[in-house]
Structure formats: C-alpha cells, structure tokens
Image 1: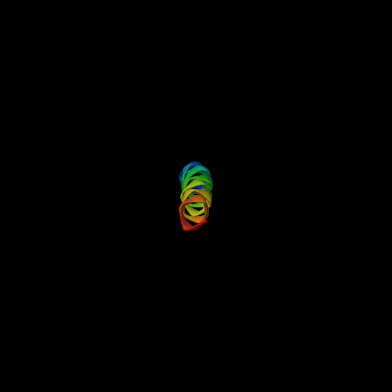
Image 2 (image 1 turned 90 degrees about the horizontal axis):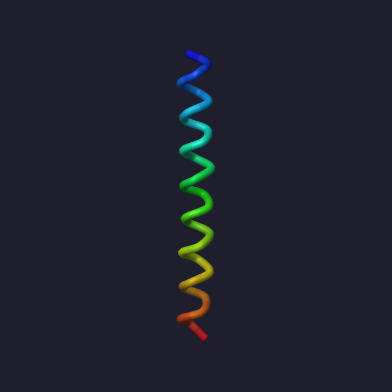
Length: 31
C-alpha cells in the first residue's frame, strides 16, 4: 500500500510540474 502512495505522489509531482510549465507558456502568449 505504501508503494502505491509513493507512486501516486510522484505522479502528482510530475503533473504539478507540467501544469506550471503550461501556465508559464500561457503567460508568455498573453504578453
């Protein structure tokens, strides 16, 4: 069960990084 949580957390971290990159890209487009 712990392994599953660790895998889930790493996925969430990756998704958060992707969201941040997309947000930055959108900001650049808005200028």
